[in-house]
Length: 321
Image 1 (cartoon, rainbow, N blue to C red):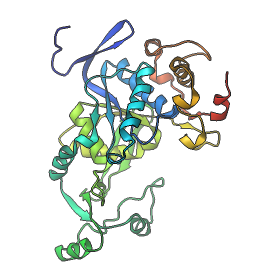
Image 2: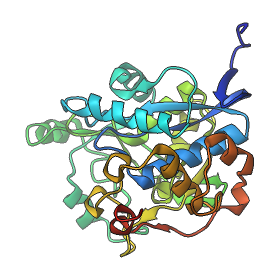
Image 3: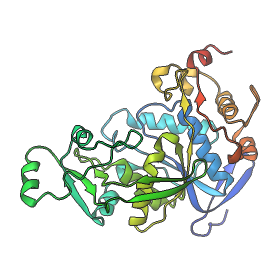
């Protein structure tokens, strides 16, 4: 195949090839444990949103917190194998955040920042107005003098916060939630333990990869205004979002490994059967219907997606024949 023009790529799905326009979607798991059904469902949705709009589909391993964990590379390998088994191909090289520390440092260096010595307890006690369970940073360390900072450094390592104009809000556009406006506080760019923070790393990585479509769980919607604001501050454009309903256990809590057989390995099902289960939860297949990724792509309609969480009874699935 001849080289593609800059910014374009192809991806094979079955017997078809889809030409990707500039721009991309992505899926970015953290290698803490095998992907459970909720993770796989979100990955499938990210793939369907990207491919159905002609975008490339990128994979990124978010291993900043696990870079020194011996099992992380093997966990990541199993995660990637599960995605491939379900038919979710990807474009380009797989990015690992642990290999991009210089990029995060360079981005932070171009922002107005300050050291922060507050603990989570300090912030909780100082901020009396939680926003949907999230407490904005009250600015405790914002205007410390040099002498005060020097004393604080002897007490605990400093985090690094970005300085945001007071009262700043940001509105993002979400394919499922519509327009969403949220506060942007002086959020953390680098934690006190020296690890670059999620809100910085994902924005820097998405800008570098040309990601303009972010599909992820609904629990992350409240972080989108901060990330969109940061994308613009770094000279980019905020992506479009689709925050999709979560998979939950029978008690309505977010699905987790403690709920039982919720990974492909634990279920012991063929990949096609797992894909059918995910497709059924999205209204894309009848119970027991054989499906593949190409068929689901042909059926995919974001407007018809279920709006409620998907309840997963792991015990019932484990005993299903």
